[in-house]
Amino acid sequence: MNAPIRRLYILFLVLFGVLVYFTSKNAVFDAQALRDNPLNRRALLEEQRIHRGTIRAADGTVVARSTKQRGDVYTRHYPTNGLFAHAIGYSFTTLGRAGLERYRNDELTGKNNELKSILDQLRGKQRVGDNVRTTLDPGAQKVAFDQLAGRKGAVVALDPRNGDVKVMASEPTYDPNLLRSPKTYSRLANDNANKPLVNRATQFGYAPGSTFKVVTTSAALESNRFTPDSTFYDPGYCTVYGKRVNNFDTSSPFGNVTLAQGLQHSVNSVFCNIGKALGAKRILDQAKKFGFYERPPLETPDGERYPSGLYRNHELWYPARDQDVDAGRMAFGQERMLVTPLQMAMVAAGIGNAGIVMRPWVVEKIVSPQGKTVSRTRPERLDRAVGPVHAKQIEEMMVSVVQAGTGTAAQISGFRIGGKTGTAETGRPGVNTTWFIAFAGREGQRPEVAIAVALENQTSTGGETAAPIAREVMEAILRPPGNP
Image (cartoon, rainbow, N blue to C red; front, side, top):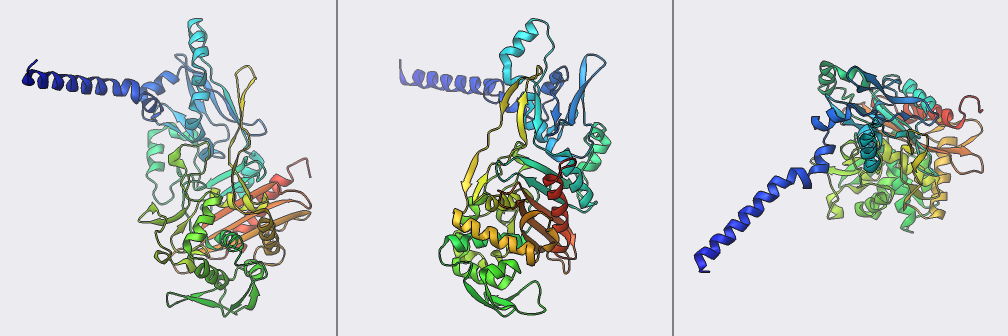
């Protein structure tokens, strides 16, 4: 074969290969992605004839179910309206899917057992999806919304011992049943002032304010350069890059204080100086052990979970050099630090669980239409964020915050509460994002609940606005009706 013919033959083979690749790409390589695409109308129309599984709360309350319509098709209904909207999501032919409805779509439509589905179809049986039982607590969820009282923000509560999410409330919420109307969906989707379709618990990045001092304290103790008894002099401010950084309460300096007292009374200058001593990267590396710089592994789509950390130009950013970051300000939760309420609940849970951070999850188990448990979520350890000795020391410091510090509004009679307040600047004078994170349990026992509350556009402090909300939600979990 001469050279020109050989080159022509090779060219023919290359072009044929390209043709095969592109004709097969959608059908083979991208098949799964196409099926999962919420805008894939063909898949959604096919699923209209499937009896989609029921989703229930932890107590058995139905939060999503399918009802049969004319033409042997099904439509989705949400009996609790907007109570669990952001965690559960929605599934409609016209819109696609969101939340747990999307993440667990294979189980809910029976696709997780294709062989059984094919056999059922050959026998003329209707395809029925599996049911999902969640860990969500309807009573505590309602208390969270009642306490938010229309204020923008979020509440996340979880069990620090195993990671199961009890509460995930985002305000403003929405009623998934109303999304059947294209006009309603368009109005909510384009409401940029309120963003009701966005899950503030997992998608909104807030400056954490002084709640981040728990992470800074962890870094300080783990460095072995500081102890709870390390002393500082507080003149009411510290100086970073030649600029004065005041304490939130500028009425009077604290003078000589220990690290433990600095956390108890949320003294900014103490943590500003710790930040300067440790450097930004050491603190950020400690934050990573709590889950920062990763999407929290929750059962919702990736696009509905944002990682926490430093952000630059709207992108997650880890500095190459310590001097690229104002470590003094970052140490008490300002600078360019943005966090989600879910992440801060994980911080509180990690301290309450002797330094171990558990994977958060909302699905307790998958149940077949016949009532058989198909699968059950097993608790999974994510990381040891802090050594047990240091975790116990921080736990004691956080308990002092609630007993006689900035978080006294979170006290619950008969329970041991450890918490941390936060009041983050927003760039608008007098308008803050307020926080409270905490863990709680019976005296002498492991904490049963950890929580994070974040509120937007507040003119007061986290101790005055967020701590009372946390108290009511924690008490609803610790003292459920009928079990005082």
